[in-house]
Structure formats: C-alpha cells, structure tokens
Length: 58
Image 1 (cartoon, rainbow, N blue to C red):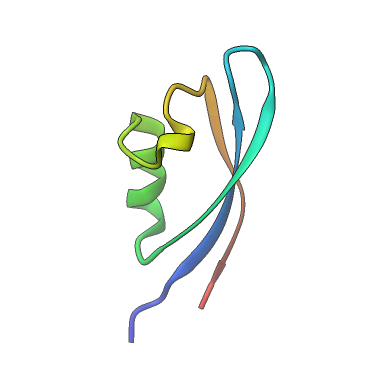
Image 2 (image 1 turned 90 degrees about the vertical axis):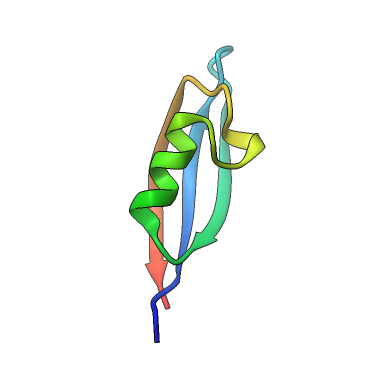
C-alpha cells in the first residue's frame, strides 16, 4: 500500500499577498517541484514564492 500526503503550501504573489493552498499526492517531492516550476495547480502558477508549511502522510 502506497503512502499519500496531504500538504499545505504558503504562496506569496507578486503584490506580496500571502495565500494558502492545500493538496494531496502520492509523491510529495515530485508535486512540490511541479508547483515551483509552474506545472502544478493553476492556483500556484506565477507566484513569486511557494513554501511547504505542513504535510502529513496516510
């Protein structure tokens, strides 16, 4: 049985507004890289900073 992760990202837009994004995946490292490259969720695209704030595995 493979692990799944629920995670919370803090994003900072170009206008310095902070927002949070919640997601889930079975490969946390890959998914974080996708978000940072702009190939992840549309919500995270174009943000000047994306930081992992919390994750939990199930």
